[in-house]
Image 1 (cartoon, rainbow, N blue to C red):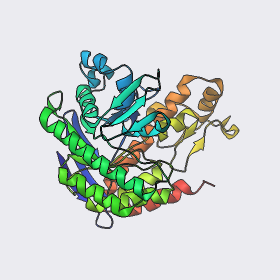
Image 2: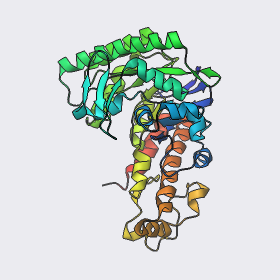
Image 3: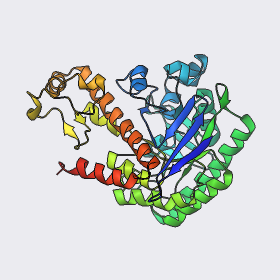
Image 4: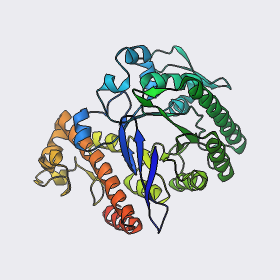
Length: 375
């Protein structure tokens, strides 16, 4: 399932291959986020053109709309969305965390009200696994509780233990039902919690590893904590995760953050950051991000970068600035394509650097150039 191909002798960076029912994923990898079943503004062929290997779907949102009945009747999430590559679905736990004012957590699961119509809903570990099995995703995430930041020690302990008990219930459901993704076995990743407490991160990681899942995510990050706390959560979990299983940092991050976490041994990432920034006119370049709506680009005939994908390089900065100011959708689409291609290209360069044993040098050079023109 997961094959470790190379490790950099100077750090924890790893290069590997993850085999799923819908294809092989080269790691480290960034996963574009398709919350409602599609990546905002982009066609599946756009994702193929930028060599996206896997995308992420949102269990909570797709469960509420259009619902499992619709998706199941149309052949599962891959056929419904026409994406034929690997797909990961989250468990709904993070979305439940974001509904803190309208939800109630118990041993049974989480009771909450739909943000769409206010109807009462119940999501349990078993139900989350069942929904993702109906979707037929290649990788299904276990149902967990994501503690807030800041978080008192007592609450963090209770939350960590609850996540472990829920993981056991997920495991029992998986063992009994043997879910698939079309013709292959659906993979399942546990989610390490523990807030900012190193011993709880270790406890969570060890407990999940004992349950023997296909991979392990580090959750409860990017929930308002300082960047250093985020990196510490990775450091406090990574040593206790097996070398022969993929590691996934959930909901992260900026280009420099991704490189930092690759250096710490993380294999997989997802984040709405590149597409959300694109929709507001922020484009990532090797020389740092630029705001395409700025007046300095009014007469600029050059493309966004010299490394831009041909789909993007045909447009001048002047045209993209004009399109944003005129409210044309093409501007959001081109920048969304560009930013995701930038992230995926960064992953490819990282894989090559790891293979050649020079990841730290690559990271240093990238950071120096990327940060040179900021602030």
